[in-house]
Image (cartoon, rainbow, N blue to C red; front, side, top):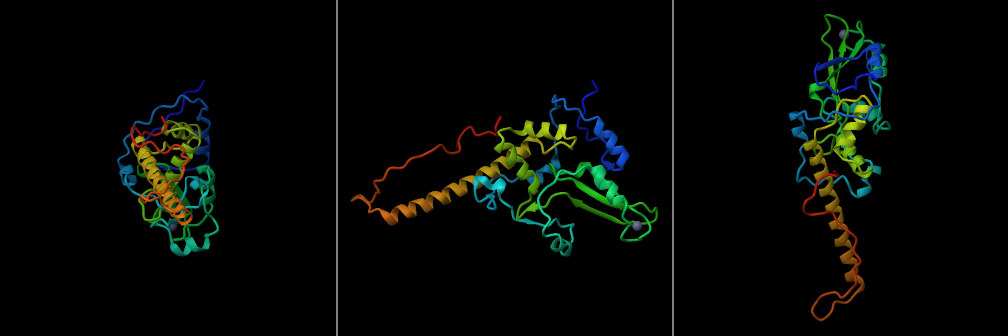
Length: 252
Ligand SMILES: [Zn+2]
């Protein structure tokens, strides 16, 4: 049995060439014995969203909902308009992407070709920082961008928030996401602390939605019922569980 592939953060810049990356793929094992990602990703601190109300999530079924997003700073807004129909996430084989880009001429010098690199140290959870460079020695063409937009008015990348919501919907926690990325030969996801911050943000959003819903329901009750002499409404309320207020932890 081949050695289990482990997530390594060594080698900050990864250059993608078709053959190299294809070969790496074969080392990915379906073995689920996953090393725990204990790396402290300080850069993930920017994703801390504790206490924020994630207003874009209008309901718990938000995984089906399109999130309002803004373009990454490094992307050209006019280009964003052209590709308005293209949205959502795909799982992309980096070697395929690199091969396609390598067939393009450098937009700066038009002599070299485009070369794709990844700055692994700058990744933010599942959002990778990709860099386009020129193969011509004298050309300084350089274009970097993250592979996800951020949630409107938030620091969190949409891909991370969605991934955490997805894990919770299918009933697994941080380790589930770690295993998924390992078997898929992806880089490891956000660390556990960042994962919890996303859970907290989702929880805040759910509570905000629940309160708004209950306020609306109370308003409707007042329209149809007369209050008792003490000013209270004597109506029956059937309740289902709610989010735990204490001892809350991600689904572990
Ligand atoms: Zn060039």
